[in-house]
Image 1 (cartoon, one colour):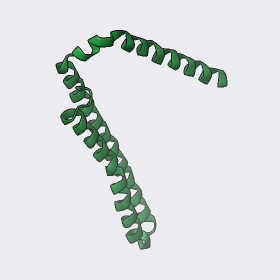
Image 2: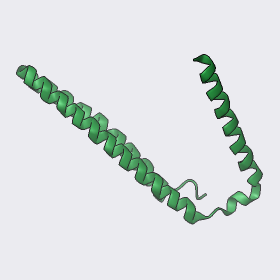
Image 3: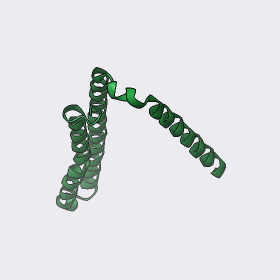
Image 4: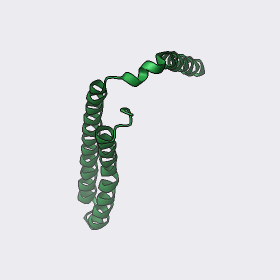
Length: 115
């Protein structure tokens, strides 16, 4: 197992070095990048980030609500405490979608790749 992780680490390191060499070879030509391509990639990345985060958070919230209903069915006296815990968990789950939305908006309106 250690040999496999060492091999993967070495290959990853060589991959990063290869692309950093290409970036350094570009030199002065890197400033003339096509802004349309960068904006298109930013739009796709923002859409995938917000969509993926929304889907994952929706699945997490559904799982949390299922747990609440199962817990309430098993022990009805705990319904109040379980509901409070569920709302706190919903808030924590929803922060991931909000973070993805903020990063997506930064990529669209204050794009750091356009210079």
